[in-house]
Structure formats: structure tokens, C-alpha cells
Image (tube, rainbow, N blue to C red; front, top):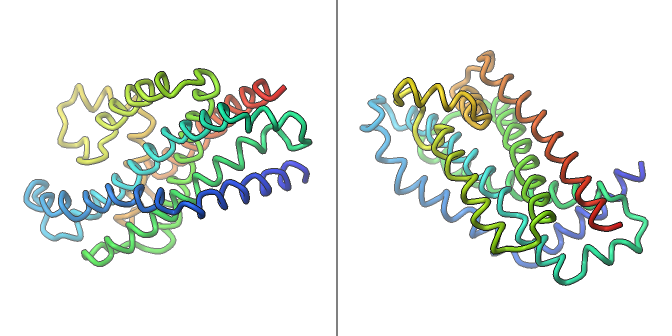
Length: 251
């Protein structure tokens, strides 16, 4: 109970800080919306599909996974600023759970990501996208697990390096191959066999395939449950690792 209460307190504080400066939510939505408006119309002839709805069933899930990955991976910059300001050090004198210090922040990031995902989905509905509500909620669960995992990983790396100059190139180095090997913008079915084989080792490619299956109404596709299990395991591992670093940094 103490962990839940402490996590809720940290979440409330972090959410309040975000709401005081909502421009970050708008900035987070702007780039995906530009992809939705300016890139997605090219997909119908490029993919050889019959309707815009089919093109958006392929593109929108990848776009949402992209948002979850990148939105989480760069959260560590805010934590480094808090470290520099002494916020984390002052946590030493509080009885708040060290795990809650991480979970409260990561849950704030997850809620922010889901808010952006809802906005993008609603815009996509105006472009003939159709998705079953139950499948959509499962897709949002996939996104939440991705966001929880990537934000926890980013916080852990930030605590380890304690420098924006190190964190920025490190996260970019991780993000680029993840993007290219997950089939986010275009399905990997169009890729040569060797590239598909390499992508099979990228856990995010399973998440993208599972999310696309949910958007096209294929709830029973193996990729859905494989993606959910993989993301859940990685999220638990990332939270556990980052929480240990959090506890070490505030002792």
C-alpha cells in the first residue's frame, strides 16, 4: 500500500509539472501529425493497397509505436536537470519509496504518451481509419508497456551517465537501428530476407507487428500476444534495473 500511495504522490506531482507547461504535449504530437498528414497520403500507391483505410491500418500503428519509443527514450534529460538542481538528493530525507520515485515519473510519461496516441487516432479516424474499440485498447496497452520500458531505461541511463552530452548521442545511437529494424514506417515484408532475419531479433518489430494486427482486426494473430509478452518482460526488467539505480543514487 505504501508503494502505491508513494507512486501516486510522485505521479501527481510530475503530472502537475507537465500540465503547467502543456507545450511539451503539443510538441510531442506535432511531428506525428505531420507524418500523418504529409507522409501517409503517399502510402496508398507505394504499398499498392486499394483504399486509404488499408494504408492507415499499416501506417498509424507504426507511427504510434514510434511515438512511444522516442517519447520514452528522451525522458532522461529532465531527470538530469533534476539531479543538477538537487531534487533527487533532497529525496534522501523523505520516506518516499525509491521505486515510487521511478514509477511515478514513468507512469506520468505513459499517461502523456497515451493522451497523444488518442489525439492521433482520432485524427486518423477522419482519414477513414477503422478499428474495433477492444483491439484499440489492447494496442494502447502495448504502447503503454513500450513507454514504461523506454522511459525507465532512459531514467536509468541518465542516472548512470549524469550528462546530457553523453545521453543525447547514446539515445540517438540506440533509436536509429531500432527505428530502421522495426518496420515502423513501412512493413518489413517489403524488406530482403537478410534484413527480415536481423529484424526478428529486434523486440520492437514484434510490437509493431502485433499493433498492426490489432488495427486490422486480427486479434488472434500470434504477433499480438508475442508482442505483449515481450514488451511486458522488457518493461519489468527495465523498471527493476532503473529502480536499483534510483535507490543507489538517493542513499
